Image: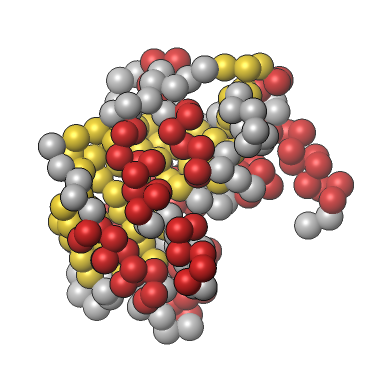
Length: 231
């Protein structure tokens, strides 16, 4: 993608009513359309979505394909896709506007800063779909299912809240099995290392991203783990 095209997309994001940004990690301000500073921590339902429906996050959402699919299938649930890449979020936000998915929004920020923008017990569920597995051992703590990230997710999740991981990577899958099992505030409630070798147990697993289709074409098995925050 050319630099001019990227800059245009970044400028477009400033006018989107379904996108919020924090692109300066040293200054935790949340920016809405037309450079308006807003504070929505603990108030996403009432201030943005204008309802009291459950709130579900997709982390490292990329183009927002999963967020959009979930939002279209479940209009009674609010969905937010988080990613640091503005050009990717532009694609998801544009589709959400065209499809009139008012229950879908996006936040451009680093996942490490998630606690700055979501209040205690505000989130019902987290989806992590095909994240970067960071295969080098020196980067284990950058995996979104590592203990440092689980500790960040704990305060914003409701009691009984769910964390989902969908991945093709065996290293990340096994690593997550270990971190979930070792985490004293999580209970593993579902674990399958090949979700397509028998009928799916959840309709949400039917949705396939661009990357999942690539992995399937290469014959890779898709794995799914689900853990619940203890009450």
